[in-house]
Image 1 (cartoon, rainbow, N blue to C red):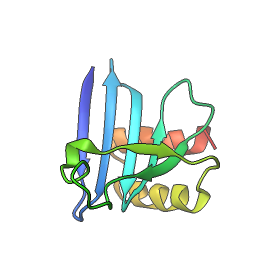
Image 2: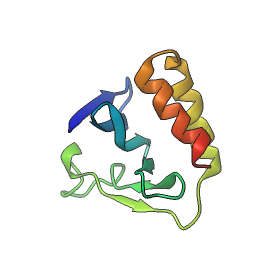
Image 3: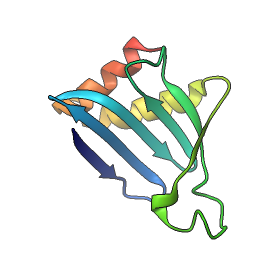
Length: 105
C-alpha cells in the first residue's frame, strides 16, 4: 500500500489517496470542514463534514481529523471538488481520481 498526500495552499485543504498496485484503494478530499470519500465497496462518493473547524483540544492537531458522513450527497461540494481536481487533469493520478467522480455519481 502506498499513501499519497497533497496538502493544499490553504488551511483545511488536502487530498489523500491510498494505492495498491497502482490502483486507487481509498480516496479522501477535504476542504474547509467538508469531505468526500471513496472506497471500492461504496456505491457512490460519500460526502460529510470534518471536525477541523472546531477549536476544542481534540481537533487542534491535524492528525485528529474526524469525518461524519452526510445522509445525502452534497452535490454542490462534489462539483466544487471536481473542478479543483480538473486543474491537474492530464496527470495520471488526478485523471484516475476524476474518473471516480464520473463512475460513482
